[in-house]
Image 1 (cartoon, rainbow, N blue to C red):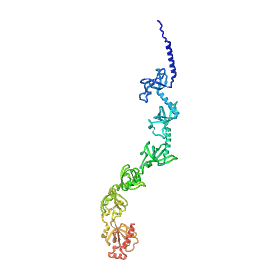
Image 2: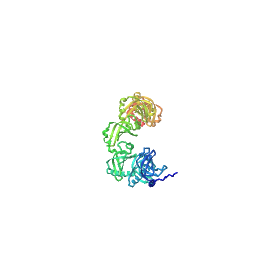
Image 3: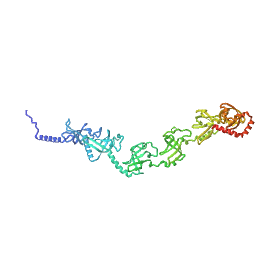
Image 4: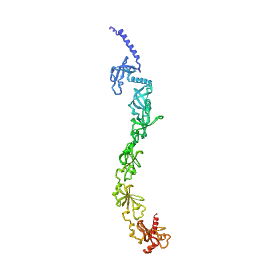
Length: 567
């Protein structure tokens, strides 16, 4: 068998050698870790095949061409892309490439260049990390909490998803460490704004600002590079419990400069001063007698404050709340936040005071009492209270009449009304007097019957002989009760014909004695009695008195002692 010649022609061998040599040269130019440019020549489900001018093509995972996870890859055949050579050859003989890592290296280079030129970078805050926030500027960077804003931010989570510009304050490509600051930019901007604001900052100037912070005592307003305090008392002419009732952080407001100290740069602001003080025309709007409506904004022991309009409040004193009810505390009658009607009783715009009355909305029931209960009429009511000086009897709801202790009985000696009455007793009484102005209703129980003194002279004329009980013995005589509650005085000179040094030697308290009426004054409720006159007939005794002096003068002397006994 003839041997076949399998050797290549000399020309082909030379071409092959040349191609191999070129391939080896290209192989030498491809370095792992370098970024090179290539062309997409084929797309599959998982990879994009890229021609980088090497002996073999490279593969890039298809997902690296997606703008974001889950999105469709944005790539087509013929696109030119920058890729990073991760390995010259994999198990299938293809170059391992990465577009994602090439992009990051490019970004790192751009950031490095920006740092050298002192330029800003833009990024989105993507998450919360220990000590601050994570920012996507193409690569992950760290924003410390202290560099987020000029003032501490309480809720960093609110900033996630926001885009800002930042200054790179620390850059280490080798360690992959980038630290950003937003505060540096804000401080710089604030200084620029401050220069402009200071040009217009003077007392009386009206400026625009933004609410920066709220406290219990006021709101801090950013006027543009400089903050001013709007105190809670300068927010509104009306009543404000807390600044949050009017403002929220970030709100834009117009304020007037009340005070400005250039040395300390302290600014005091006002909002209510932009508007007219409502008290300036309050007397025109709320003249005395005007019927008004308002909201109860405050309750105190002495009354309730009613807001008639923002900045104008009136006081309803507890005594002006009801004609008849004894209001111990306003909360027993009205509640805070409710709307009430009232009448203007007095107004002083200079002192910013309005006196209001709620009871004046209704007719004064005391003015109707005189027609309903004429003097002399008899009422029936329940004892509502017993005091040392008398008994209060219910006439109507909230209206009591007083039976003074002196008007309980014509003749009984009552030391305390509690001896005869207790709370809840039902009694009858006569209307004696009604004082509408002072709201006093006077009643009498003894007036239900006749005064026994008016007919005493008829029942026991002078000269009558009676038997009575000694109720008290004094140095000047003895008192004898001749009827229940009616006493007469037996003077020491009327006890015996002979001189008596001590009345207690003649009579004793509690014993019964016979006496004769020798004189009386029913108007003054005084009766003169005699024991020794029992032994004389009437004519003889009158003659005796005449000889001793005028009988009326004699009675006056006795009654003076009677009064002394009562004292």
